[in-house]
Length: 227
Ligand SMILES: *Cc1c(COP(=O)(O)O)cnc(C)c1O
Image (cartoon, rainbow, N blue to C red):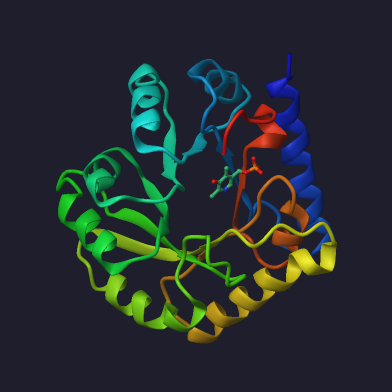
């Protein structure tokens, strides 16, 4: 059995150590547990170790887990590709969406966000490694999308998310994050306080370059059968 409780402690320790090593404020990097493809029982094990923020990539799959876990005080993040026919589900049942890369999707999320809920926290996904297969907008198009999304009433624009092309070398892992952090900082936009950077394989590089939220699946829950 993969010891989830133990892995939670180990990843938290790694985050705290990286904050020290790269002179980041203690506690400035939040751990998101990426539970896609994993059962609700795994989420409960992580929850019992104090984990409260969970991220999912498939709206329907996430919804069934949310229904099973209704009694738990979980903050849900959506990090997967967004089809138009899923925006209603996402707008109703998540606190954060990290993967917005089109104005039309942002507009639908804003229109469909229920009035009794707080504004939906949004990160814009940037295709920082210029990979044609990946979702995300080009860095050049970011300022325009920021202004457009920022004007929507039921959303709260918070920052950017990136999934760079995989690299094993530490300095190559840092490069795309450094580029995006710099570009966003130079906009001096008062609302942008979130850098959703880093996965199991590049957590340290992401923290070195300003991550405020790391999205960790494999290191917590073990390998997945798909995606
Ligand atoms: C699956 C996924 C993760 C988690 O990746 P691991 O390598 O398992 O830590 C993070 N971010 C996104 C967008 C994902 O789809």
